Length: 255
Image 1 (cartoon, rainbow, N blue to C red):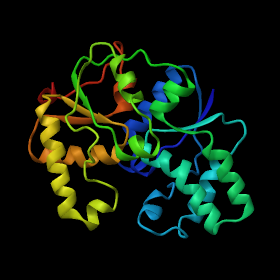
Image 2: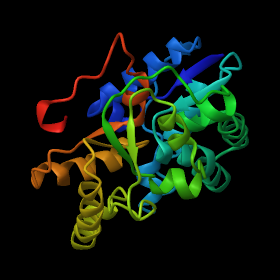
Image 3: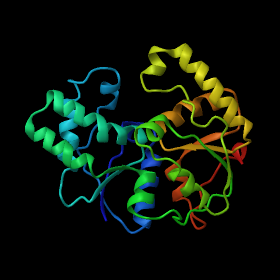
Image 4: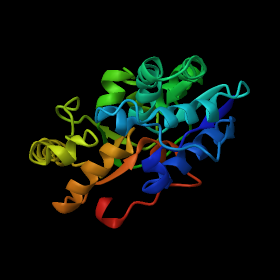
């Protein structure tokens, strides 16, 4: 398939390794990648904070960058951004856009997928040939779990990874407390929610906590670092991209 890869803001500025891993994985599976160089933010931050008119130019740009009919699917290593494109872009276009924008959004949203749902539902694969001989626990992010309803697709992909010791995360479906600008506007509540999540992560004895969103991993990873837990965070794509011939190196503290 010919896939349009959306990097996301966090991927572009803070977590490029997750984007590179996504590209490596999809290429290894035989897909042709297209990376529109003029892609920008999807506008999720604006919409989630209540500013629905302001992201119209961002929504329009996304539709223009990925609306090429030769692109069979748009894939991104982010459940929250995929949820924004699939659900919130239509709301913005309907309220503040023109007919061309509404048509463009409708075309693109129907072929947009978060990484795990693309692999399982569209590519039809669960075993991607990954090798990751470490103890791992998985945090299902709110947007992927509730908006996209990806279900156990990330776990099915992880269970097929050679060498992995996958352990269940207690109260996994509880929010980590990030929520984008929620963590800034409601810092005390966010920190309390994070403390609960850190307790559950460290109770697993996992070397790695993984998820499908770099934003949640940033929040959880910061907390794990501050308490010197020895557990690190990695995006799901980075685990799935690792192989026997190109393993992912963990630090000694996380082994």
